[in-house]
Length: 190
Image (cartoon, rainbow, N blue to C red; front, side, top):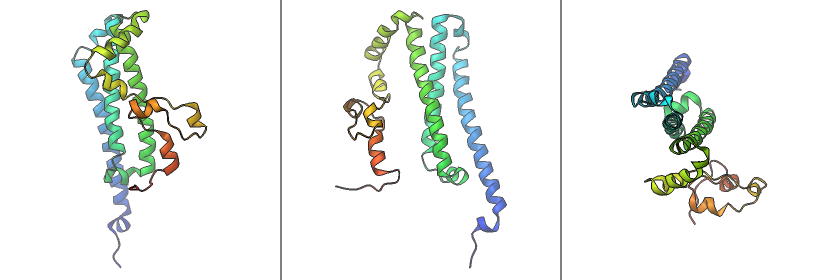
């Protein structure tokens, strides 16, 4: 009987997993530092001097960080063999979930701070500015369509009818099909 290399050298496998985890951790932090460097190099820190420019500048930073974390989310769920061997799929899913919440909160902060900053820091002008940004700026309608719509209360109570607005206007995942099929359900051709 031939033994697998992992069975022969269990210490080596543990060392490889540890190295992969360290590289993944450092890569994530380097990507966050890189986008922060881009923000600083573009004058982000200097813009913190004024109220409106400070809001806009912090909004840009939160948008950059959210984008970097969204990319990390894709990598976490891409089933990269080395990452899956080092962390396990369950741990990757937990990290993916935490990264998703963090990224979503940063995206919301980006939306609020950019809009409020463009409204010259005046809270009363913010709704009109949000409308102007959405309608007049290129690509913003697509960005709004990509924002997840909260699930309705009757969905949490077990209704199988998804919100029509979510199905039509948002590519956000709907929880109802996942509840019915489970995570690893095979695709069925009908």
